[in-house]
Length: 293
Image (cartoon, rainbow, N blue to C red):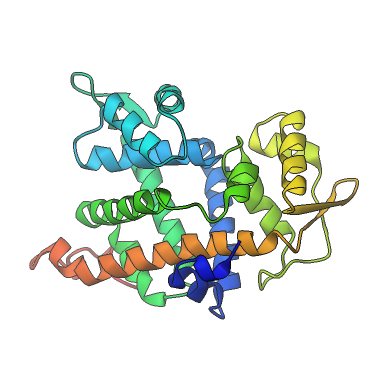
């Protein structure tokens, strides 16, 4: 990986004094939501599940959530094929993300819409460590027009990024594509770094515990960890003891910096547009629940 080829905003976030705290809070918040919400836990497991759910949430706000369009949009990101997207659509129906709508369309369930809003608010709470003014956007997401605008901004930026050259192909192969890989990456990152997001000597992470926590088989976790070791993201130091590999850790660091940079940028865009989104007579003051603390 060549850091000089990365977007300047990612580098700036990675060099921010509060980056370590923000990155750890992002991982912590995602895992906490997974523990509290079984539907989100399923969606957060890997990039394919996440992109499908995110795209469905976005298309639903635009009134264009059909199976054909959802497959096309997911496949266009390069993170999954149209056939896998079709299989994941069935899975989303099964776990309560989607419901059948009029004609051949789908709608997001009310429960998942609220879960996704909580997810965005939780992610913004981590970005607030870097830019405290984003707290206003986080609370304003309760207003449907602000939620729709934030989701549209975020999704379109992520679609554009997905069509560029992937700066972390080995990270994608090791953690983002395999089932439960994203959740395991968050867990490894938190266990194997200190409060400043600096790698520590080692951490105790039993394979059986990881498999049980994220609902996958032990052989699957073993293969995932072996691949991560082969790609120099992990070092196996003994029974259940692992550390982050010094060669692969910069990719992990910039992976979190990229997520936080996008959250900060999206939040700032919506903050600048917030007054017009809410309308002249529909300000935050009109919603006590939305008023900034």
